[in-house]
Image (cartoon, rainbow, N blue to C red; front, side):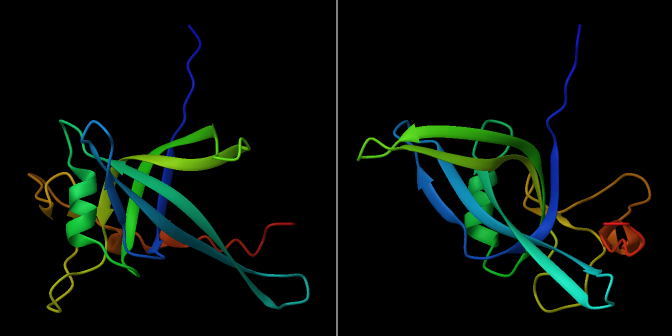
Length: 158
């Protein structure tokens, strides 16, 4: 049997407050606009930067209430980790035109922006529990591996 993988992992900042709505069946869904940026030095030695915008969809379901957590805790500028899959959708608008969209259907969301103005915690807040993550063993965070967030690859030939 042939296997495949459709997995996306993003770390970025919200470009706006979450947009939350309910479907006709009452299921709540939140839409996020997440910006990721990368920078590099071109051949002339000039610093370059490019920002990509990602549409992320968070659903409430039996296992997780991601839309509710986003509505309650997230705001423009917050840093988040998103894990999910890429989906492509098409639909017809009111004028009969075919429209297309690409979005990330999130399965996990971690809030990386510290809350409360106190000391910065190493443990990101998990959207699944809406409280600081608790581990039985040693915990790791992005602060322990700063190189994981560094996309700078100046030695690439292109």
